[in-house]
Image (cartoon, rainbow, N blue to C red; front, side, top):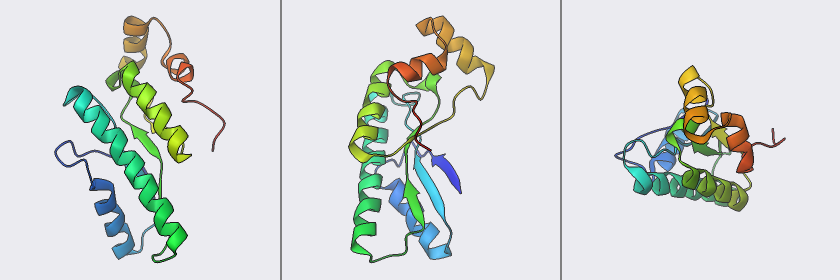
Length: 139
């Protein structure tokens, strides 16, 4: 299973809870927290980025220790460009640099995402993501 997870009332520790479920069921997965500011503004955005970083660090630590099966991987997550302000994109860029992970974001799933970017930022959403170094060749 590869997707991001959202639980605005339970951010910190939510990815570890998911990982524990994957391990218990013997499933493979790659997950991240759906960083956004649509419910709680900057505070929610910061909490989402922190959860992504903490989870990536947990995965790295568990892999190095060899104490549990390596079935779950982490990436850095964001909901969609229209729900992440520029400040959030900066935070995501720093999280990617810190963890060495790639970005999981649902971009242009709906035409609204594209029109919002043009209306609010005067540019295509992929150009906007690129300006924050969020698009690269990482598989």
